[in-house]
Image (cartoon, rainbow, N blue to C red; front, top):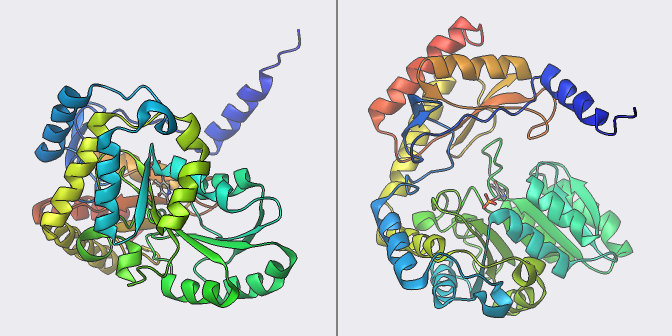
Length: 394
Ligand SMILES: *Cc1c(COP(=O)(O)O)cnc(C)c1O
């Protein structure tokens, strides 16, 4: 009989043979510098927990208190009965923290990109998108129906050439880029891109998921890092990484955010975040406003780790942030490397296609303020042993 699901077996076999099948390990403890992974206590180098806030007592206390005060869930979308006073407080606090007129809080960073792009551009418009932009930007852009023109990675001159060529054929344009590129750890040249966009009257949007809590004063993000307050149009952020919780944010001028609030489909059709999450996000902002100490420690760890890796002879690409890719090329080698590290008590995942281009497989190391200098030594020693054993370094 005709097997209508035969295509699934074919695709699963193809993925397995290409070493591209995802077999997620299972966490047995909270996200932290050290974790229990598949039953083994290991040094964790792959969470986005840049500031060590995911298991912070202040965030947990805030979540507990919010459950008592506000319940387990809002049970409604934001535009109907789901906007709790907590959401308004978080949006006001986030706007103040980032130095913008207004901010909108949504379920996740992924959702924020779906929410913001379709109201800004449609079929008659054009999006200028960095070649290495995150999947959620690409999906948001596709959802809008606008023409998508890809410019070369972090290349403001190429971006301007594409704008010159294509913008005249469309009603309006949107330039969109990741802030910190999540697989390479390099930073978008936001200053140059802003100038280019301004020359051509193109709207600007940056997804700062990996810069939030990492770049700028006390982790205020990439716009703060470049001093572009009030100049750069739209900043997408996430509370799911450095902030250690969950949630997405859209920040910018009140005129724009008020409009997104009316039009964004996730605002209209997806329920509001839980009180526990919202309150924990507020506690994370409190901590960052009180002290930049965790951000400083994150960067100290990053500098130490990157310098040592380069010195050992590893190729860490163009990284200039706490994301340090260890370039290996071959997906099977990357998987073997990750497994050997795990056997040594170090957890760092291999990343392959389609998350990164074919032939660009790597181990991605995420530094965190949760590591002590001794932890870093432990991790570096494991990288050295495995790198030698697999012939990656001499
Ligand atoms: C992780 C990430 C997202 C998704 O954020 P979530 O809050 O986890 O949904 C969006 N954009 C970029 C660039 C990311 O790295």
